[in-house]
Length: 334
Length: 230
Image 1: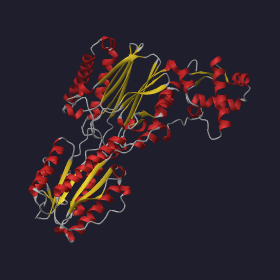
Image 2 (image 1 turned 120 degrees about the vertical axis):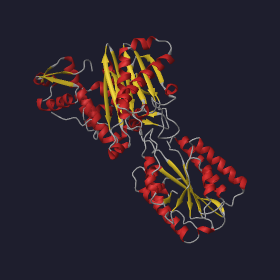
Image 3 (image 1 turned 135 degrees about the vertical axis):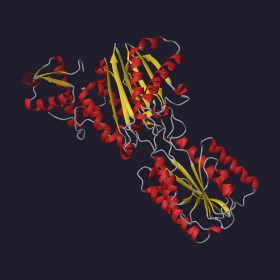
Image 4 (image 1 turned 180 degrees about the horizontal axis):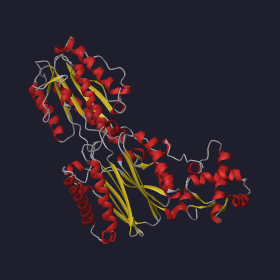
């Protein structure tokens, strides 16, 4: 099962000048197809926030409604032309509704769609697409900029078709994709080496391990407190991740990531390791047999007071759910 | 119920350098600048640095070099982050006006700096060349034409932004104009160097804060503080 998550926040630059957030994200799932899309409106285009909104919705609906057709077409160039046309047609419609020019709606575009065991990915302009496969992080698509820091390619650029990148492939062993605007990529993509930071894997892994609600608050805290401080630009991200790989994902976490997940203070390694072991014992027991507090306590020989404290952490981050006193795994087979 | 403190930390992220705005000040320090003009120019350059240091982004983005022409063309300050440029030498007025040699040197330095950015994976904005003169160039005609052609070519290919500034009534506006195919040269009102450099710094600040797709228009209102547009 593919899970999607999105987040966008106004940059510090736009907050000062009171320009709306020009990064927009959108996701849609139907007919067994899941799609995420992200667009970054051009800085000087007056209504580019509307352009970004229009483009993400248009491309997402095209991908979700015509996935099979697009995938089966062997002519990649024709698919690119079609996707570009759908996006630009939608922008033209928005332009006439708002009595503005097409250029006023200039924006980049990134989208990922998955159905059955096939993915389709498109990317125009700056921003990046990260991919996790076999629990390993890779760059799926690098930013496509002009020479200067304030130049890139937009849907409305003359040479958009030439710069539109299209990928398709198998989802075997694929953990997922993370689409990022350039503001977000500033924190996760090292331009010189082309390497991605460990934080990308952490985000993608957490998206399948913890509840939607907890993951949203994780994104909110991370972007508001850390990522936004690294740039003046708007920041956004759209993730599509494979929940079926949750057990492997958990096993692939390093010790520190597990400490984070269970809110364990790592300062005393011996105590931290012991705490981690205890959490894993509790999870294994609840997975084996969903049960009430006293029963789990009895089974594991942990005093109820301490077990309750640990279960609260697990419920808090969404690994375990408490349904009227019955503790059970949020995900099967962790 | 515990509340989760789960979030990314700084060590989960990468550290990319700030995108740079390389600016070369190509300044006439020939004998005719002696006295108040050179004093005011020195004040202006100091004000330029101060304005940039006061901005959260520009202090890391702006990179300045200074080439002077007075007798010889000379690089008196090579490109560096402005926080490292703590001892800018005072400019002294003396000698002729070898403008072509100075412009050539400035363009060489901008090219070299761009190459360093590329080699180190540092993003950058279009380089700026600021030319200030109060007289007529003493370079040979062929050197002058070569420098003009080189500059015009770069501007035409969107590789350079030129700010040509005339000081006083005796500056050769025609030659300044020939260096700048897109933008008319501006004449400094009196000795308002400081006002000019504060305006220039604000333009650098705007550029260093600009996002993809954003072009910074020339602040025409701001020009009126120091330039005559006639």
